[in-house]
Length: 390
Image 1 (tube, rainbow, N blue to C red):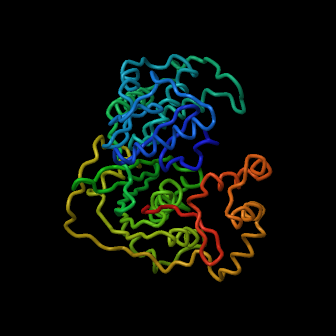
Image 2: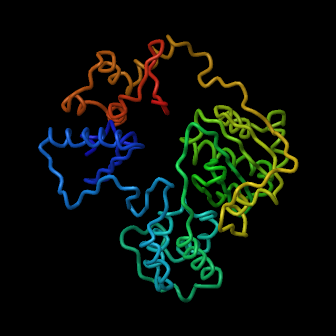
Image 3: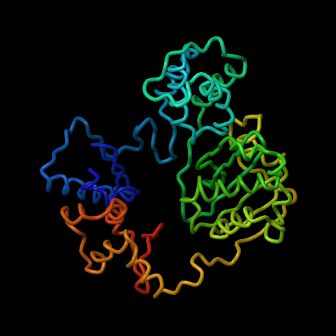
């Protein structure tokens, strides 16, 4: 399927093993894309079983998710199984439950914080460096009130997940970030139908070095959260798109003029590549992100309340992604690159390599072939188009 539809993946089809989902925004477009799919299958002598096909569906179940015009949500049948699940009896059961819950972590605000007691229990019981089958050690001896609360909160969260909105790259994003010594949290949202709807949640616990309060002030920790959310978790959403960032850390308002250490300067330079407008909002009005990094959970994301007084912290700085490199320099570097060099020979001919020729290319170069239609040439330099209005 990758060979047949790799160039259409995420543009008109979704692929998983032998499953193909064709998506579109209108009946006419859907018919065109179905015709394209069936033509390619027919050319390869492949057939589909009619009883296993569904056409013109308003929503479908896909890999444990329900995908509809409203957005993406968890499969209610999967949630029903969790609702009646008993407390794990041994380590293998516990790891199985955590693996299932982690699969849906993008739907759960503050997942890292909620699951922390159970993860600590796994680390305590799992022999270091052990590989292979998980031993069935009983957990009753070490199961305390924190573990029980974590287990029940995860069950509740898995059965009350929100419907995540689809990202609309014609609209600006809203990012709420917060950090505490319990963890980092972020909520990416967009306005749909006059309401602010979540697109994705993200959270993580602190790394050992970040737990050192002598080295990580509250301002530095907030900067860690901002850098992590923008450049790691939500980078694909935010590259080339405007985003308003809300933070409850007032010192972050002076990021552009603050005296920063070498590490913080490096983080700030990474953030400069994004179109960010940072605004200060008191913690009492920043509950969405607070819930992901602190103790108190927020089960529902509501429309953002109007701000009584807000302070604009900064705007995007002048960006020079590749300072000092002219188009001719980039042209030379691309042709010398071990991945791009061989690929460019086919690009300049305007002909996609056949199966035998692809086999001679590296794996990253073959990935470029799958994205052939997304590539653009400007002043003899090859670029990858992240988003196109076409």
